[in-house]
Amino acid sequence: MSDLRTVAEPAPAKLNLALHVRHRRPDGYHELETLFAFVEHGDRVRVATAETDSFALTGPFAATLAGEGDNLVTRAAARFGAAFGGGPHAITLDKHLPVASGIGGGSADAAATLRALATLHDVAHDDPRLFAIADGLGSDVPACLLGRTALGRGRGEQLAPVEGLAGTPVLLVNPGVAVSTAAVFRGWDGVDRGPIGTGDLLAVARAGRNDLEPPARALAPAIDSVLAALAACPGALLARMSGSGATCFALFESAAARDAAAEGLSDTGWWCAATRLR
Picture 1: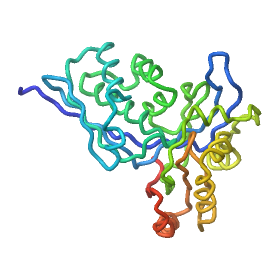
Picture 2 (picture 1 turned 180 degrees about the vertical axis):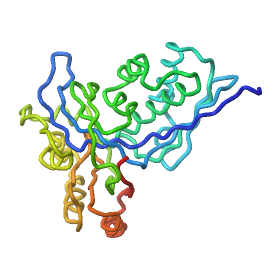
Picture 3 (picture 1 turned 90 degrees about the vertical axis):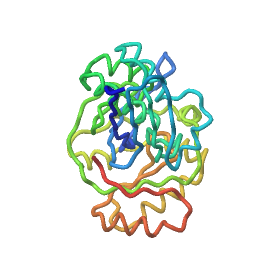
Picture 4 (picture 1 turned 135 degrees about the vertical axis):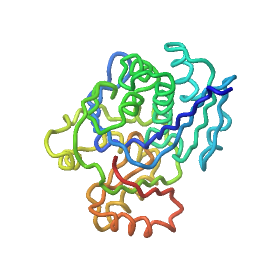
């Protein structure tokens, strides 16, 4: 077929520079305030028009998803088709992010799928219908669809873009343990410790916290070791767990300091990725 087209979209990892849990809502969700940011490292989604629908996995973490018959990428494609049409597609997910690790891999993949399909079918990336699909797929998917630093409220879907910190060196570290998001939220102590502040983004992030860290650390004590190691690295500006864990990150004052930290952790057996904020 001569009219086949292909679009590739990055699916960058999401970080929560701060994540404040304010209260549990009557609908079972939690009211949050969070500073979303994105790094250059991540997965990649390739979508092509095709004669029949297909889904393929590649990359170092492909095997962790290989047994799933349904995932956020295929759900995103199905819901896009229901809303906009467009026919069948061949989708390939190149998986470089650990699964269930607090950095929004699945949400980023779904968002990248929506962006790629929108490009293929001449739908604006800021089309409200696209964000409605994203919101229905999961709390982090709208932020990943926006793909830029933002303050998230509600479940995280109410987004206000903010400026600052682009290009800041980052080291991502995961100790190789998976933690259940639902179990971590169940372990939250229910105490509202106040809102995220305003002003300089780095200062606001450093003054903030991740309220899910204590329950995640109780479930996966390896997180303690990762955070302690990152905090002790020379040049680290902020060390924190992202989302519900177990991936942690540190922002660094220089790429050299980040790279030295990565080298220092190279014999731990942990997954590490040296990158920077988008």
